[in-house]
Image 1 (cartoon, rainbow, N blue to C red):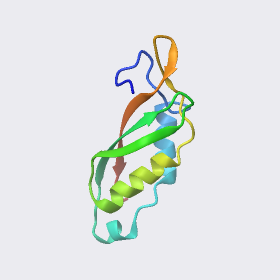
Image 2 (cartoon, rainbow, N blue to C red):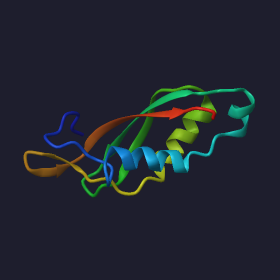
Image 3 (spheres, one colour):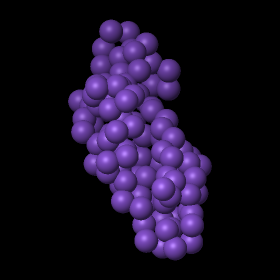
Length: 103
């Protein structure tokens, strides 16, 4: 797994589409609403050469429910544009903060 590739893996459509996808797909856990839990969950994952996502891990979490929801959203993402190293598609690590806030 390459930490700092020549070309970073990207979400199809870029950062704005990524934020839109997260916003549209987060289903706030009922227990988190009742306990007024909110915050930023930091995830890391590997984008494979075919664009699929594996090895999703919580680097810094908020609560069990919000961490689980953040991981679920990442699992649902479409294939990413893979990163490249030395001109070849490569397994690259991505880090992604997901903001979970109550409106």
